[in-house]
Image 1 (cartoon, rainbow, N blue to C red):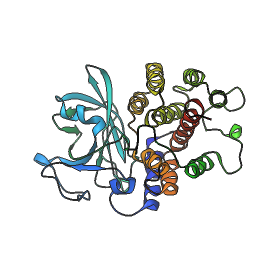
Image 2: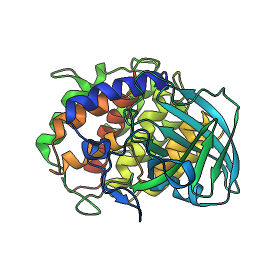
Image 3: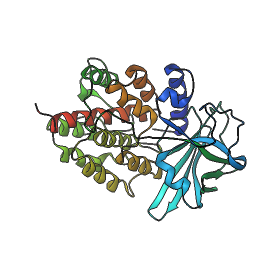
Image 4: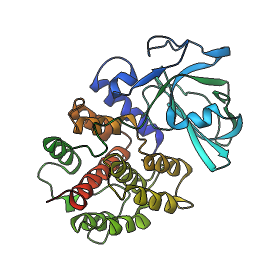
Length: 334
């Protein structure tokens, strides 16, 4: 992904194509309302939560941060549709985002019930002080709280779900192109050709060699421009796919990727890789997985994922295809 701006604006257009109504409903994300919260997810932009806080739908992936003690945070990036904050915890640096409803629904986000409409969410410079904890996030003159929770780990039918063959073909065709050889696939910002890291990853898949696939992580981590480099997005999609599809070596693969990420890529990307290692993904990625098991329309879910950012959605989808192939080649009887 080159810029967060590109990700959020592209995702907003894609969501309008999927359906009308609330963001959680469009992404098919289960939402758990808190006691005393409004009975509908469509809360007006002017609604206020406890003591003047703006209500959000918060990911359970950041519940510990939100419910924990109040900690000082710093603004990592502020754009019209998202503000990302870094927070120091006893376990290290973590990241939480405050997102408008038309932003990509990341597993570390507190999602507002309103779109960006071209206006900045809050005008604060990078490095500005913020607060996270005690049930709230405060940045600039904005304070938000959780009116509802959503689970970024998609609920699939079984621990080792069977994917619809036609759905897998549909996903591969959307990612690689109809009739285009996989060897011709390229992502902006990543070296292409037979000696490039994507070629090495494809080779590892063909040989059904999970260890070789993991070794490509040393070449992909941090590779590409932006706050979430395309190489990281490929690995996030692969890692989450292996975890959610129940590959027996998923935990080892996830540990290898997250260990390599330390010191090699951005704070935001490291946080998203940690979420992927726990099977926590964006609402757009989750909708594709659910569509692959027959739970929801697959075609609009694929379009929404591929519309995320300039490269992020396609890189994540490539990672998911890689995970599907590795599961098929290394665990399923032939």
